[in-house]
Image 1 (cartoon, helix red, strand yellow):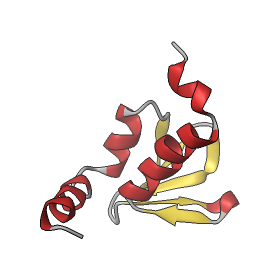
Image 2 (tube, helix red, strand yellow; image 1 turned 120 degrees about the horizontal axis):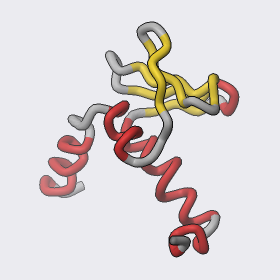
Image 3 (cartoon, helix red, strand yellow; image 1 turned 90 degrees about the horizontal axis):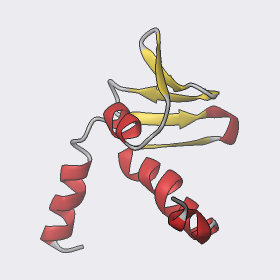
Image 4 (cartoon, rainbow, N blue to C red; image 1 turned 180 degrees about the vertical axis):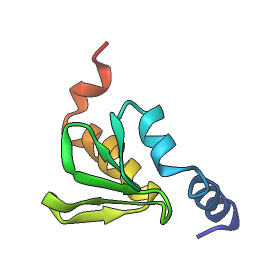
Length: 85
């Protein structure tokens, strides 16, 4: 991986995962020390570790994995969704 790409990834990982989720339309609510998606109690954000855990799907990761899961993979699965107004 080139130095330029690596620094971009490092910069992305500096973004707060909860802020990223909220700024991209995810309904995040505070539940104690964790944050959860409003409609999916099994989807938990750990702000201290900057990770998410989707317990019902056995999926977890950092901000990069979150972006891939909800924005890149979703667009590939349903390309028509990209063009909805």
